[in-house]
Amino acid sequence: MNPQGNVQDWIGKQIAGNDVVLFMKGTKTMPQCGFSMQVAQILNHLGVDFKDINVLEDMSVRDGIKAYSNWPTIPQLYVKGEFIGGCDIVREMFQAGELQGLLTAKGIAHNAQTLTA
Amino acid sequence: MSMAADDIARLIKERFPDAEIRIEDLAGDGDHYAATVTSEAFRGKTRIQQHQMVYDALKGNMGGVLHALALKTTAP
Image 1 (tube, chains in turn purple, brown):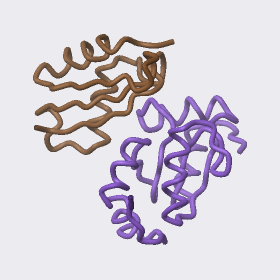
Image 2 (cartoon, helix red, strand yellow):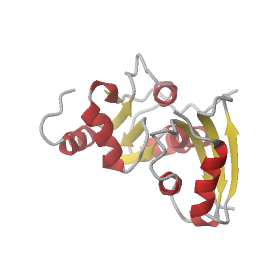
Image 3 (tube, chains in turn green, orange):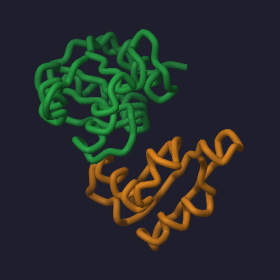
């Protein structure tokens, strides 16, 4: 991760250049916040291939992503360029099966598991 | 840094006078809350818009002094 110049442009390129992007605290293998961990776990559970961007590595990205989406918290999930939500919304959508439907509608490969137990 | 549950409820109520608000202090530490907000104002809005409206009502405290607010919004 090395945003040079305009951080908003850099963020825009990450979101445009990757089908599924999660801006999170920590990495998908080592999340450093419970909320980021929950979203990463949901995506892993669904077998979704996603790019993780660790906002703790760069303050300009951490602040920049909040401005980009007008959303005050991390994590933030983007699918095919569209802001889907933070932890609460992603979890709610996952539990309702809506997230799986959205992934299917956008042509993102995933397994069709829903929440059990 | 933390914020009292009453302050959270007051800010939301100021913006959405009709709102039914339920706030739980999840960890009992005044820092990790779950809020359920029900208001007519949310009708026809996406979840993202609904949450943005609540964040806006919290006047910049979300992501700042208020670290953890699990949010659920619905129209009645």
